[in-house]
Image 1 (cartoon, rainbow, N blue to C red):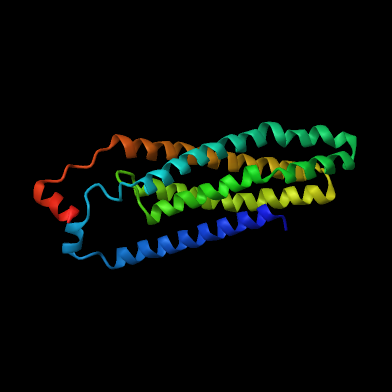
Image 2 (spheres, rainbow, N blue to C red; image 1 turned 135 degrees about the horizontal axis):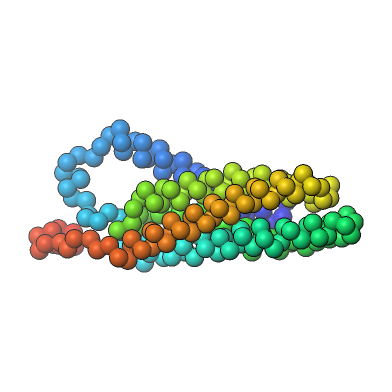
Length: 214
């Protein structure tokens, strides 16, 4: 197994485990709501304002739009080349497929890092950012993993057996779904970014400020 595939699988496994744990924690909090004293002591605006959470948000937005570009480039530029190479015989197609797979880290590793960035924002929430938006992005990341299993297996079959019209159609529709998922993630990430820097939490009064700082 290539090193970058192993690295991607580790990142995706960590993402899925963190997502599952966050979902279990959310259900637990629903079943056991916090005490009134704890709720009243919570910070207004929700989440923390820090360079870590803001950094995770910026990384998630940047990698999200990187994946948007990669998804549509594959759909309209890279994968259609397979049809152009098919008439030249399997040897040429296999050579191109091998060259493409050798350069795959620049596509797959940013996608894995994007998933990790967004799921970490469930554990380290960013102030003034809707958790529903983060959950929606994490859900779309899970959908991306599911559809990538189809596209990846199809790519592997074409690399072994050569080009076929049925495999090509499966690759194109599965990647089209993936590109749409990436686009939805990109748009939601911009909404989260806008919410973070345009929504202002209510200012603390003197006694509240002292209670938070001390």
